[in-house]
Length: 197
Length: 418
Image 1 (cartoon, one colour):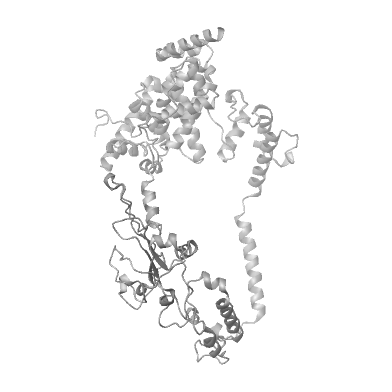
Image 2 (spheres, each protein chain N blue to C red):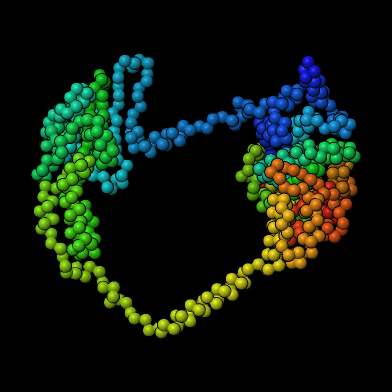
């Protein structure tokens, strides 16, 4: 009887969590001890955003799959370290970005994040889960010719629709610098797209 | 192009099935199996992929077709008519067994359809009833085959094996008894083409047609003329004895479809071993060789010089001794952590400064590797002394180790400089 009551309560909790907004979910994570139900809700809600973010940074689907898995596991393992100083989405994006950077360093220890990685452009066409839109593929190839920092700011702003405030919180950078970086990235991409036709 | 106004979507689009599988995999890895979470009330998506997703079975139809084409038995077989109105009417198409040998090696002139050579008389036609009722009954038709039209073979009496033998041979070939063994023998013979029909009422007459390709009638014709072997009397005598033994062996004669030569012994006896050299079939090798005028000590000196050069080259390409010792010491340290033994890591004096500073971290603070996968531990870099951080950076710069920078990364990235 007691077990049945607890199951019913957990069912009610799960259905309640699905209705929570992002801020309410972050508040839930702060106030209560991280539970499996809460983590499952976080995975369900943020796994696509994490995957597409790391896929944009890593290009390779296999690498993105590894990075997404590691990111979500770290969220579960370090959930108690979330202090609520930033949004939950920003915190998750930060862990995902760090995981991507670590993976890039492991793949290529001599990588220079100030330089572009044009070899990634060749990997796009041969990878999986691509849309058939030509202009999207051209844009994705052009992004590979950007330095990592500009690439990161462009992804977060253009594809993920994060505000400059959130990106500044994520990257510990001022908003003015981020605006300048994004502006440079857009201008470069427009030139690249013009060259690529 | 104006990127700001013309919004372009990302080129990466993964299906929902992938995310369902990813979620299930992560929950399972954290010991939250999907049924357990579902039991707790989570509206977790199903682990199994939807039907309209790429989880379809692999289409092997093309592979099967290709394999069927490559199969010499089924490559030319016709499909059985499975129409409803044809039920009760047995129409078993002729099975044609062909060879997959190189077409240049197949005696195409022996196939009447191709050559219309009436001297080739190696076709037998046996009905199904004769096979079942009198398996040993073989009728004679004649030495010449009936004219065969493409796709339809006329029923004809069974050939007498004595007439199968070409006119050039005097000894009859072994009697072809129609039994399972014989059929299997002909099936296994790649030089034989067999068409089998049943005795059931069919549109085309049921027959068994055996195309027997004449083999070489003279054993010596099968011997590739190699001058060096023929010139050796010992080898030739041994080979003659081998041929004699082969011809006298009844078991081999029954297995092999090769028609024995009527006069193999006489031909072998007539051949006398040639002891003389062939009339300049090959130029004498010794005549084209010249004595080297190079003194022997020069070769020894050249060999010694090559060894010395190889020694210097080997030393030049070796990595520096310091880095090698560093790597060995680091590996020993890691192994000692895994095994949890108290074995000391070599002479401490030989370790570089960076490893000495890191020793306490590795031994005391970092987690000991166990069999349990994915045990994470975070070392707060702000609490570490500056010299340890410097040593970690030195290790990372020399690619000896990689430390995950969790929170201090973007301060190092310095986006302000962009």
